[in-house]
Structures are given as C-alpha cells and as structure tokens.
Length: 68
Image (cartoon, rainbow, N blue to C red; front, side):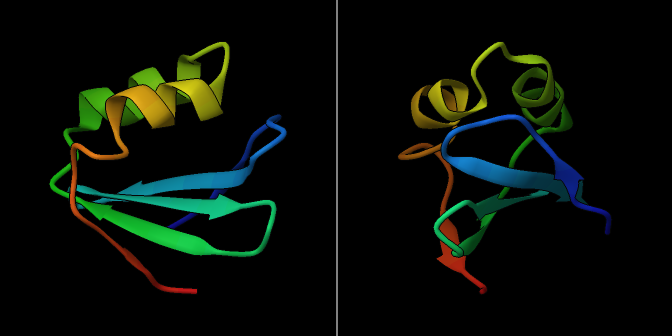
C-alpha cells in the first residue's frame, strides 16, 4: 500500500487499501480507519482541506486504531 503525501497542516500522507484508510499525521501518529468506502477516500483526496474533510466525514464515523 502506498501513502500519498498531501499538502495539509495536520496530515502528512494518506493511503487506502481493501476498505482501510491510512492517515499519517504531521505529529507522527499513523491511524487505520476500517470500513471506509473507496468513495470517501476519493473525496478526501480531492477535498480542498484534507483535515476538515477527515474531521467531518471520517473521525467519529469509522472505527480506528493507531498503528504507528
């Protein structure tokens, strides 16, 4: 799975594989969000603010775990 760097004050890179969204934050943590539809990943990648989209459409919606 490849992580794509993004221009964000909060997020360093984003990846997606088999329904799991991976988010590496600038503070160093890496989180895996489970059960995320590919459409949500595509919308996140095309959002004008990756951090705002993540906060409103992913956090609190999909279960997650810290993996790094």
